[in-house]
Image (cartoon, rainbow, N blue to C red):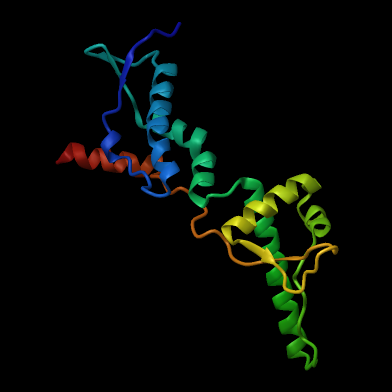
Length: 189
């Protein structure tokens, strides 16, 4: 049976956490609380020091596993579905570029291959439903990852095109091994 106890994270100052965006900084206390929760869940067999349970590196690893995808989403500032749509659009763009290069190499006079897409094509390409694509497109346009293709006219189905990938795709946290090395380095000093 679990007992109520206070948890001490002796390596908390060694955990480097991104400073930007603001939401990630706000998630730092949640991350520490998740380490504490893991310590409490695994308290059996651990010593209590002055009434405190000491967090271990494995607790940090559990927190990373639990929160990594949420932190990644905060860093890139777009949802996982938005990212999948943008990556699909980028692949489509790169394939069109490669096809254009092959045509140029064969001496073709028309070498432009269109990579613009409609919502229906995005539904087919990603496997998401139309409503999901519409939300992801709005999000991707708001962040500048996807843009309207030139020549869209009201009353016709809009076309979109890939613009850029998010700058940072993941929240870079120390691995369990890297944290262990830092802890051992501190202990030997």
